[in-house]
Image 1 (cartoon, rainbow, N blue to C red):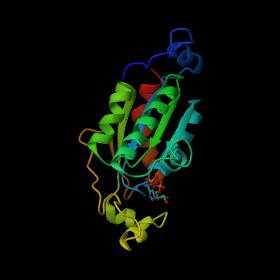
Image 2: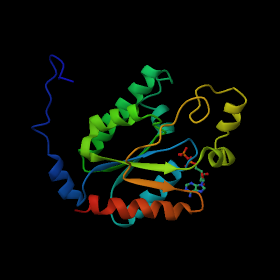
Image 3: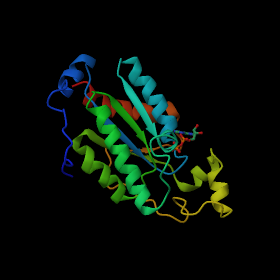
Image 4: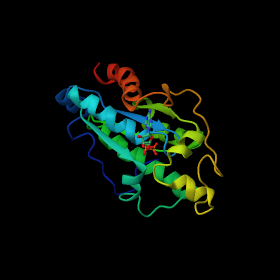
Length: 199
Ligand code: ADP
């Protein structure tokens, strides 16, 4: 999108991304985790953040609940609102990345279209990680009680039940969480992203 009239950006006058990355000794990027509700995105992100912190890497976790209770608290789940939700998340992530920060994004992001939209904004700064936990297992865990509510018809358009989840076609990683510990899942992601962050 072009810059609106009377908006004069200062991107050329502020300290550049590469200067900030040099200060932090890391490269900014977005690790975008996609998967069903309860698949483990946030739990794994918390463990991953800890591993990265031990290497001195600065991160920011963004997840559905913190974004929807803050910057996106005026958005619902209509098609239009879901699109706006992702657009804002991707733009917020971009601000962090331009500061050299590694953003760990935990969003169901159920369709190819939605993930593509994020990719259009973030480009090569974004890698996709599929937190691959089958529906039955997520329903068994039912951390937030959402599956029971959806089964009872109290939640409509619930991903995996009466709304689709489209399997990512070419994620950087496909993490099959069943039979693995949270730490094992986080370590798989850590091993893949560390070389991208510490170049
Ligand atoms: P999401 O952020 O995808 O909605 P959460 O992280 O909130 O999911 O919940 C995942 C739940 O599954 C947690 O209660 C976590 O302890 C549990 N769990 C069991 N095994 C794993 C695993 N290997 N990886 C991640 N979470 C797991």
